Image (cartoon, rainbow, N blue to C red; front, side, top):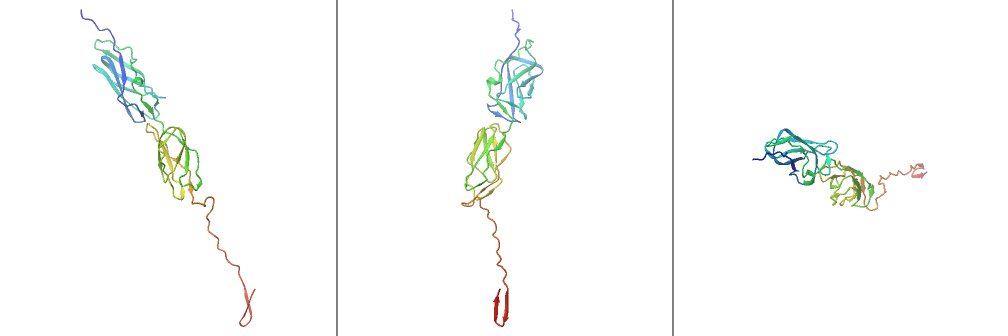
Length: 239
């Protein structure tokens, strides 16, 4: 006698084609579900993802297939150190009309992948001032909340291209004598989030011997007035 299938379908695995990496707002991440057998959904299947304060969802439908997929678009404020599924809901049946009751995957997304969601840009703060200096390659210290790649704008540049969490000191490339008030620094984290520009406090690079000397216009000295008198022709008396 032919056997009758009474075993409900299950979820074998959840995966993604996205490489293991950090992703910022706007990135689209595919979520791929593999079933133990061909299944059909009634309406949409909803996947809820753990993405921080607000859990994001994506949906798909499936018809006589062993897999289904939906896309999750990273939104501002999302964050997780290893993207994973909170739940899968929907009505799913196999060809024998057995309804799925166990929605826990045998292998989770976090087990298959290491996808980091980071939508927060680094925050920078100034840690030092240069002031007035004779050093044509002055040092500047700043603090960042995230590690990342350094970029410079204005008249200043440096061979230092990366920053670590916390305090960092950069040495500016050789500067000419003068006042510098347009230098700034930015840090871009691994996910591609870029900080606001941190303005380097205005500083002056002086020639030797000029530090602390105010170069002011010299006053014009006018000699005192003198008077003259004469009492005889050809004779002059100074008083």
